[in-house]
Every structure is written in C-alpha cells, then in structure tokens.
Length: 248
Image (cartoon, rainbow, N blue to C red):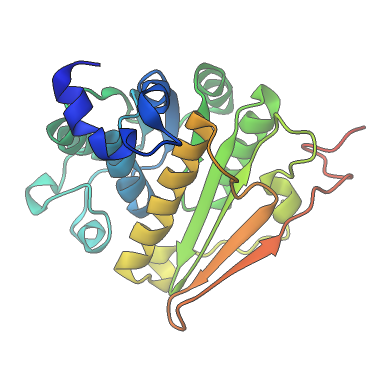
C-alpha cells in the first residue's frame, strides 16, 4: 500500500484485528453484488470505501425517480441512466482504487455459476425469490459464501450462508421454493433508512468473511423491526433433507 492508501484506510488498519494484513486481504478480494437497488446501494458504498479491491456489480435496471428515496447510490441527474453505470461513477469518485466490473443485464444461471467461481463472496441484494433461489444454487454449487438480505415495510432480515462449512444451512433451508410469498417494495413500500441498515450489515458481514474476522451470521437469521427498534437473532439450522445443500 502507498502512503495515500495507508491514510485512507488508517482507521481500519489501527484496529488490531485488521491491521495492514487484513486491509491487504480486502484489497485482493473480489465480490459479486447481485442488484444495485436499496440494499446494493448502501452495501457497495461501504465495500468501496472500506477497500474491497474488486466489485462485480450487476443490475439490468435504469434509475427512476421513485428509486431516489432509498437508493443512495444515485442522484436526481442520474434518472434514466443504467444503474450500474451511474453507480460506478459514485463508487469511483468515492474511491479511485476500486476495480469495478459492470454487468448491465440479469445473469443466466450458467453465468451466475461462472462469476460465482471467480469471487470470494456473493452478496444478494435482489428483491425477488426467483433470483434469490438462483443465487443460492450458484453459491452451493461453487462453494462460495453468500450474504443475503431482504427488507420490506419496516422489517429486514439478514443471514450468511457458507457452503464451505458442511454444517451451514443454505437459503433454501430457510425458504422452500413454492411456499414463499413474493412481496416487493414496489407493492408494499419500505422505510428508506431500513435499506441502509440492512445493506450496511451485508457489507459488514462480507468484510468479516473476506478478512476472517469474528463470528458471522452463519446459522442465524438477524431480524430487525425498526417500528419497535427491536433486533432479534434466530437460530437457523441446516435442513438435512434440503434438495439444494442436503446430503443424498
């Protein structure tokens, strides 16, 4: 690291649990971020600011006026631009050191597998179960840790699924395909800062995984209710009969 980088990341480097070695691990890491909406906005900003070296950012959508209430990656004059393009401008202005790969389309399952093999962590910032199930399958198939979150109305949930640990559940252990009820912010609404809280936690868990720090949310589901400002952690066991991660 050069002098400017040492100064930029000094408040992290001074933490003995991180030090220069941990910061270098971040710089050498690659993450795949699925979705640049409310969750992806907050998460990507903190990953870039914190020094993650390579972020693969995927989103097929364009910036809309209704996004700006919660998607803090964008400005009013970004309306109409591809989200990955506008988001990249923000992230590069924040930290020129970050290496960005931009994918302005929805990935096929084969593409998901290909990119999952290239990264250290997958972050799911999508807003629908079809994508979440596909991302989970890619995570399990490639053995790549997955940091997942969802937020709607006044509630959010976050967890970490790590197929490198055979005791870890996967997303399918939590939700079974066909039993879920798709609910989106578009149809139900969401409080703006809630996405920032959940996305920041995703960034935190991702950085912990990349640096090998502390205990992650693996095997737990963090539940946040901002109306009562209550946070609960529920045990999330592995389903031995899970068709995705269970043993035959």
